[in-house]
Length: 112
Image 1: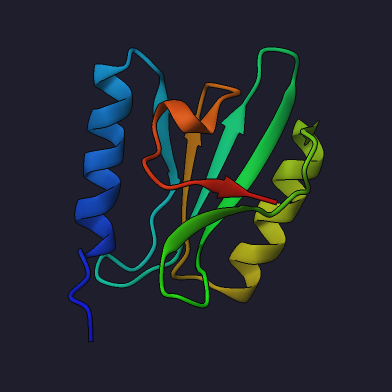
Image 2 (image 1 turned 180 degrees about the vertical axis):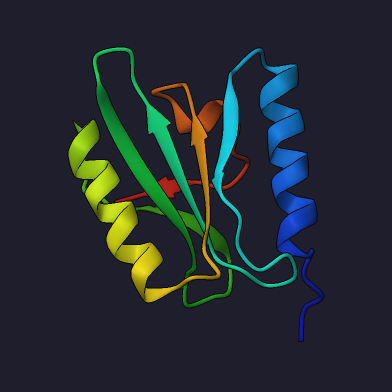
């Protein structure tokens, strides 16, 4: 089994990375500090958003899946998606990042 970083530590590192990139980021919902899943909401300047979730490929590689589809959606639609996911998983972390380009703060690929 592969050792994994605790979610709370990973989130702090992401916030720091955003800070260093001069990209505003905020924790919208705190989840389980040890093993909570993470949703990232990337906000564009035009009022649209993209929500991505961590997942693993069959070979075990970590990737981010565009949960709201390939194209950006209206901010209200992103909020509704996040709320549905939070009702299903109260241990879910939600981080909002003010950039339309997830690749600027993520090392792993974004698919979907």
